[in-house]
Amino acid sequence: MSLSTNQGPQKKPKKITKVRLKNIGLYYLERYESSVQKLRDVLRRRIDKYAFANPEIDKQSLYALADEVIAEFETLGYVSDSRFAALKVRDYLSAGKSARYIKTKLKLQGIDEQMVDSLIQQSDYDPFEAAKLFAKKKHIGPYRTSSDLKQQNFKKDMATLLRAGFDYDIVCDVLKIEPSSDIEF
Image 1: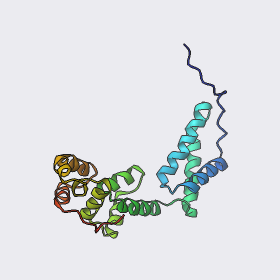
Image 2: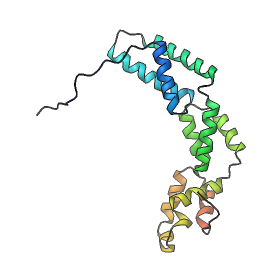
Image 3: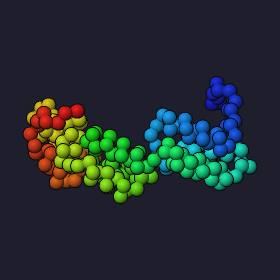
């Protein structure tokens, strides 16, 4: 039994030029707010795909072209790590994410940890309120519907909050509170 697909022959990737890299970058930035590192990854994946189909191509010179395009985009304000970080921090905080979660996610995107720390401090981050919001959204701890389920799932709820990046003391405090309707989402 042979494995075959009904797809025709694979199309060769288009030649990579500076203009093509600009177009790829602009198309990506039209759809997504991005960090510099994420945009660099997108452009390099496209270069790698082209270089795989054309082994004689010098990838390093194409990477240098991509870096030129990114520098130009930064100058024009199309891509900005500080703007990206501010948007992400705001979104994550409104979703009830922990500071540890936010720092980890943004570090993976190539954002400086000190920048993230300062943005979190500027936003009046309260870990207890964030943990309460997270528990309410996930319907765990004091926000479970039945008091029997609260006791049965105490350890599970604690583990969920700890995995979400909240400190042990905060988790204990959140699981001991009575549910209230002071958190709206």
